[in-house]
Length: 367
Ligand code: GDP
Picture (tube, helix red, strand yellow):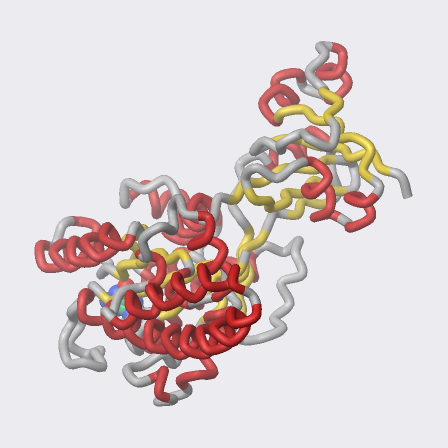
């Protein structure tokens, strides 16, 4: 899963990104080598990994990972090539979802590019740049499809949808709010083929002050403004304090727990962010466990066993015979795989089996 962090300058993107890369650097068992300074990897928190590692006396534990890309440089006029404009827009095209950081915190020492803190205006500024870029994209696509439709009348459906989509964007609305996305298969198909920036799922990360969670009225009003926009778009809001997250990543695990519980929290904002993104994208994890390694693998909900096996290796998918599956809870309750087997809790599943969150799996395959 790849997430892109966007937002205006000075809203806290780098601060959040630092928190992410620090957290990633901590997890020693993963090759978190920095290929690109703008890419950070973090482990997907999974409470099942440690108990499973203990049960199997596994030499290695490998969590599922999320890749974050810091897409700085998005400013007013980006779609016209202002700042580093178009280059950054193309980076957004490659991500699965967008984390849009919005400034809600006050600090007179940190200038806001537009002179004041106003989350609704900021969101509109960024979204407008993305919409403008999408409009260009749709124009080009529409031209192509119109030409092809002369020979292939079936494509007239596409032309009609693209024209409506264009008009929708021209009204300053994001593609993700286009009517018919929920239930019209043609709309869904055209949207998927169009690869639009504003069709991507988005989480608004409302960057609050350190004291923001304690009920500052001005900040809460800003948060409400973000929530209102998100509601209209069917998007999600995550209040976060980037600065606090950066501080937390430098703490030892026990210190971190104490620090969070003092704030009345059970997990860090970063962990929450990853969880929310997982939900948003309809993802889940299954596990493989053995003496060598206990590992979590990310799949989309509804994935069948052979495709899940393909995440490990394409050979596993091609030569798939069956999957031996036990739920994490059953396995832990029995205390060992052998005991679970005796109780008939280890199932042999075929090609049509739909994977469940927390399945502990052994794939059987032909090579
Ligand atoms: P970017 O331009 O969006 O990457 O913004 P930065 O992450 O560089 O943040 C700009 C400034 O705002 C820095 O001085 C940060 O320390 C500060 N900042 C970021 N997040 C917070 C926050 O949650 N609370 C406060 N008070 N300051 C923050």
